[in-house]
Image (tube, rainbow, N blue to C red; front, side, top):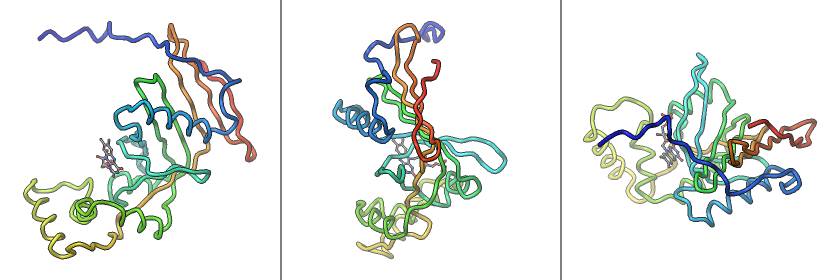
Length: 213
Ligand SMILES: Cc1cc2nc3c(=O)[nH]c(=O)nc-3n(C[C@H](O)[C@H](O)[C@H](O)COP(=O)(O)O)c2cc1C
């Protein structure tokens, strides 16, 4: 099979415009609108977001996580606190999130400081998960090198036998919240004239400005 020419692959965006007059005053309201539209459009995994962290040696890294909640306090996801992202956040709490809703020609970028959510809230979500996921949180030393797939399967069995139906939440597993100080809403436009509206916090007020595409 011939490889298509990557240099010639491009899409012209033309679905919508994002105008100052039509966006919400508060970025959280604009996010709610776009997330709900992405869910209503039945996009594949509209709740998946890229999370970027930076190590103490200033190397950035990204991975995808699922948004599990959001409100005026911030955006929440769950993971292993000892994972690579967890270690990087322990050393440098600033992070960035990105949603790409391809079919809607939309991107949302969110930046801010990350904190752990309360133990009680992590407990509540942990205990809402399917049993296999709860056992998996014990069995998988996320981001570490392991000997083999069989090793992981043995660990799953061992923890399954140990905890049966009621595993407690592992101390190394829980939620994080990114507290935003910047949001960007990007809507693809024709001839690469995309709309970019960025909100930044100024003395507790959200200031909205247009960025060049
Ligand atoms: C769609 C999708 C959703 C994911 N959601 C999560 C999640 O919510 N939490 C998580 O720890 N990993 C999630 N992962 C796995 C991560 O992308 C990543 O492999 C893992 O967290 C290890 O990242 P790290 O080694 O950089 O810490 C998801 C992967 C995909 C493709």
